[in-house]
Image (cartoon, rainbow, N blue to C red; front, side):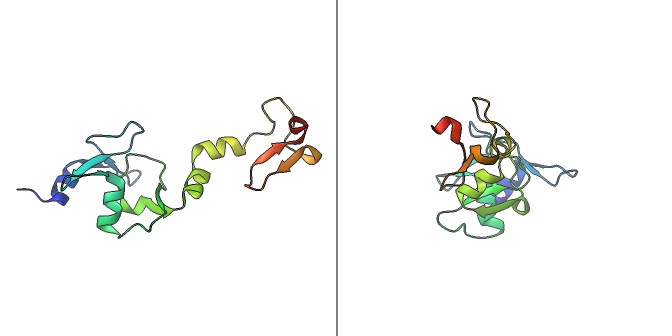
Length: 127
């Protein structure tokens, strides 16, 4: 009978150019690898981190530094707070690059307000 690590390693493809270990088995709807160990469902990247690095502190999520959701290379994974994970993601970068609000007012000068959560707000729209 194969060990868990043997079963895990059968389901990854190492990509030399990026260093990613791509999960080739079952994936979650959002693209994250899934696996079952001792009757428990795991996200493959979390299992990989805990197996190779160690316990994930309570309240933290695993960020894929490589931005590849199906990557399970523990060197590409880092525990962070959810807010930091979102900040690093593509959607945050998209929002940060916006120069105008949805109604076309500039996010600049006297029209810009930073709310207590750090989000940019348009003063013209707030009136």
